[in-house]
Length: 604
Image: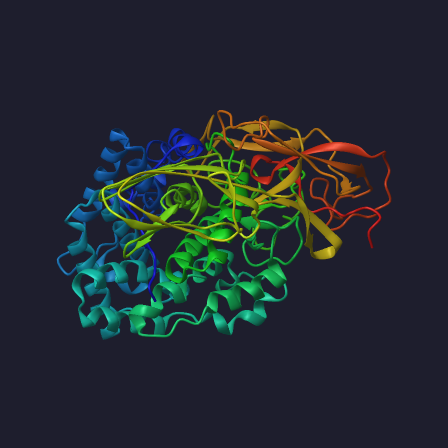
């Protein structure tokens, strides 16, 4: 397949609201974990005594591209400090993980897969010439140990085998050695085949299983895309087949799936783990790059503009473990948790609610997305996602100025010392497309750009509409943005120390207690859109960039039996109990407490 290639952080830089989003992330938890969180600060990966498995590699996987995109000297120095410490521990035979030789057979090598993937990201950012040899030795050692039977894939490594292909593809592109293909075959043979698990996805279960684990599944979606070429297999779009099943039985309005922590059905008051959001984004980035199929880029947008910001506070100092589409409160439940296998605090905002994997892993979401706007192959560059940024590619500079997805106008300034083809992906929902003020057909655009300066102006319309959801409910969507009824809330802060980990302002735990009504249904389909401009925080609940006023009425919705802070799956009654009122809905990603899936009153 003639796939698109990603640019590096040296070639593409964020601007506008996207750069501001990355700056907020650096000013928040991502930029401070190595100072405040023992599992990063004192990890065995850097000679300490804390967790020596996935948390440092997870964090670096996002912190590295964040540091280089922002060109922040202090952050880059921190990156190099961690990388130097990790490389210094690599043993003579290539083993790189922080465990004793005698423990290798019982060490889950998911951490090895992850650190090599992260080192490949670091190389793309830094150009550090030590890295190819380090990954080569680590993977050659992995090959020797697996082939001899000294170790085998088990646990997380077995269910995340495809992650190894990020670094295997990196190696094969440089070395073209047959053992790399042999290792690829061994890893797939020992890995889990998710095609055998689809029946388990059809009915929610309270049993914790890796084959129904939401993060494993969202990682898995890219498995064929990243592995088929090295394995010499034909690409079959297996991801679409599996995604369709997942969406039918566990889909959400934001194009993700419920999983708290295993797949959880079609209830909009069930949770979706934050790790799954960023991993699904990463899968879709690769699926678009490998296939060029627009559906993956469009689904990526919906996830990135809705699910990712919604589960982080505006300042990105705290996050949830799981978010809910209909989230009327974030308060600890006094009885058993309203989730499958998560605890009663999983939906609170904090340093590491429920479990710390998301604390480390959420960092990759925005930085990797920010590398995805432009891709290239041969003499062609494509604008895959309309994000404000500037591309510098060997004598070609493309600057994209836009407030998309909040406003649908794009200005491209191109300076080039050579001719090339430039493609702009136009979303399927675009209406009344204009190019430099002239009407155009709403489809992908291709320009034969000549040497010199070129200006391109793109604009299109989007229309709010009610999207069908299960259980007789609907979600308001416009373009890639979902809209929710925002619920005002009171913050209840808790500072404490547990197992040597301190939570204190601003990275303490917060409960969000609702202060305004949330029991609404749509009373009509006349919607009024207002663009307010982007403020200090792009995804602000107090100052949302765009709002849609919709006619709504209150109904008797009610809470789930035995719960006082979790709404029912569907309302008790759809009979209106108030007059029609215009309610301002705002982007899902701006709303920490919200109602998103609601009935259309009077519709059967």
